[in-house]
Structures are given as C-alpha cells and as structure tokens.
Length: 511
Image (cartoon, rainbow, N blue to C red):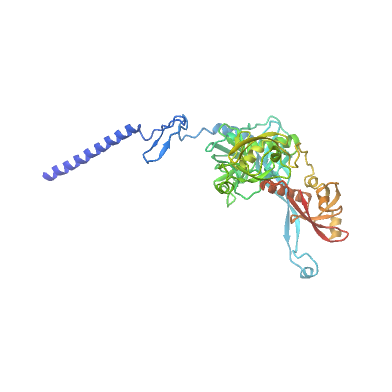
C-alpha cells in the first residue's frame, strides 16, 4: 500500500511541475506579445531599436500588410504569355571535315597532310521567340538564328510561317524577325527596372523541343554579369532560378502580371542543362535594341567614353576614395563625351539621371536606354564632393549623330569590296578558300593598314575565311570583346598573299 501511495505522490508531483511550467510559458509569451506563430512588425519610420532575446540591437521593419509565405497566383500570367511565345526552327549549313587515308607520297611531296576534304551538311537548330507586335514582329536571341539559311516559326495554335530576319545585334544577343500574319497575340512590355529580388517570374519557351513550357522561379539577382566566359556586351542580366534549358533561348521571362520583363538567354551549367542559374536580357535593354533595328537598321548606342573599374575596398584604400560603391573613372576614350563635359580621372560615377550606380553593369544598363546625341545627368563623387554634369552622349565613332545602317557587315567596316574566290581561281592559286579585295575606299581601314587591291585574304584572327560570313563573325566577335573590355577600338589581324608575287603577308587593321 505504501508503494502505491509513493507512486501516486510522484505522479502528482510531475503533473504539478508540468502545470507550473505551462503557466510560466503562457505568462512569458503573453508578456512578449502573443503566440510565437503570429507575425507582427513595425514600420521602418516607427521602428524601435532594442535588444532582442539574443542580445543584438535590432530594428523592426514591416514587410507589408500581406500574408507571409504565400506565392501569387501565376496561372493568368502563364495562360496569357504562352500564347505569344513561339517555336523557332532554323536550318543551317555547316562545313564538316571528312577524314581520309593519308597518301605518304603526297605527304612528303607537297600534298595535303590532313588527308581530308570539307563538305557542307544541313543542320537544324531550335529555339524560342516572343511575339511583340500584332503584325508579326518577333524578338529572339541572335545565337538562335545566327547563320540560319531558313527560318520557320510555329505558333502556340500550331500554325507555321516562314520568317525573315529584320536585323540582329550580336553584342546584346538580341535579334528581330518577322512573319507575315495579322492579329497575333502579344505580351505587353513591362519595366525590368521595377523587378525586385525575390519577385516571382515565369520562363516561357520550348526546352528540348517541347513546345509551350512554363517554369517558375524568383529573381535571384539584378544587373548580374554572367559567369560563363561569354563575351556578350550585356553585363546587366536578370538572374533567376526558373528552370531554363536548351531550346528556351529567346523565350519570355514574365512577371506575375503577365508582362515581358526579359528574354531568356543563357544558363550557367557544367553539363549543358539547367543547374540552378539562368540569365535573361532585361526588356529595357532588349526593347531598345529591337526598336533601333526596326527604325534605323542598326543599334544606336550612346557612349560615355570612360574606362575604369568597379569600386572595391582595395580601390577605396589605394585611391583614397570617399564612397564605397560606384564606377571609378581611370581613363577616357580617344573622343570622350564625359571628358568634354568636365568629368575627371579619379571621379566615381554614382548615378545616371538619378538612378544609383554601384557597378559597371548598372552603368551599362542605364546607358543602354539612350542614343547618340541624348543628354544625361551624370553624378560623380570627387574626393568627397558630389557633382553633377550634363553629358551629351556620342556614337561609337566619336560623333554625336545617329549611325547609318551597315548593310554589308565587315565589308563596310573595312571600307572594301570583297568577293569569294570562284572554283577556277581556287584551282589556279592552289587554295581551298579565300576572299579577294576587289576595291578599296580612299579612307578605308584596309588601305590605312597597307592592303592593296587584289590581295587574297586567307585568315582573320587565325580563322579560315571560307565565306563572307566567316569574316562577319570574326568582326562581330571583336565587337563583343571590345564592348566587354570597355574599349572602343579592336585589332583585326589579316593574313593572305598577293597572287602576282605569292608572298604571304600579314596586316593589323584597327576597327
């Protein structure tokens, strides 16, 4: 009996302790403001700074009067945007090296030691595009349509149209094509500057040749320089974690309101497939590019004419800067709009037309909205003093006028008329490929470099020139690299020979 009483007393004691602990917990929670599962926060203007339970001084800021943790309803945006995203089929021709047995006799006595020949083979590529105009204008990536001999577009309702290339810009990887159709569904343009970190977005496209695919994610970063090694002129990508795979290129990035805020362009992956990072060209950049292509035939870029680096802690210490972010001006272009306006070496650009600048990517993003001749307000910090200058932007050639379309690509840049060698000429010269300089303009880049008419071009920057398009691609690659390095001039190394002498010579041409 005593044992029973002892056990009963022990149980009652444990119950009493539990009740006391519960009461104490309720008292503490009530004193602290209620249940731990509820959410309360004060506004930034009325924030109270105090030591929290961990001993750190915190100020409470309200996120807003909305439920925490609930995603928006993305179905209306998905259902509307998918109707305006198209599937693009690109037919190309590529050169393939065929391997053959090596003839030892030819190898030792002047034959082709490679023992092979090149042949053309058809190749089919796929991508996505976004209808931006009811009358058939479609925006896509340059790398989707580059080198294409034939373009076809399939709409969401399975109608297929032949498409023509209106123009492209390798530097931003944006192209404009058109189909002959009316009353097509479109996606309205949004404002990529208004995107916020953590905001929900949709990637709409055709990954792996699967049409009308929608994936969702959030904005991971803005004004991001893609870590892919690609030399694109755009250094201000929108980074998202929406799944993007091969075939999504050229597709739409839309916000929860169904507005076009970017063009999906690339992924960061070691396998070639989605690995958590995807990048899109902001629509504020892409829309300006296609508008220029449609109106002027070429992209009109307003140039500030500065060179330098992002402000870092090391640069602050080395140069004694008074700001911790911005773009440090270390030098100027040969003809500089910034220098003419009064900006000096050592200045830190902190704003363009009131928009904060913390990096070169943001500087580039802001300037991409303007054309040569436009005036912008550039705010700089000079040894702690803030100054604002009115700068009239210049074009890539140093002038303030809009540039005319360059219909002949590299020919126009070089100031020459080039022609692919015919079969008889190739046989006579013992060549497999080459371009001949038929004529030169009086002030052409080739003539300044010392090239004369009749010169046969064999390579450009070590790339064999089998066609005019090969030279165009080399020049485009130089433009990308020059934009990335913030340098206006690029050097083109040409190698070839004069048929009358047979002497192989090289020239360096400044573009």
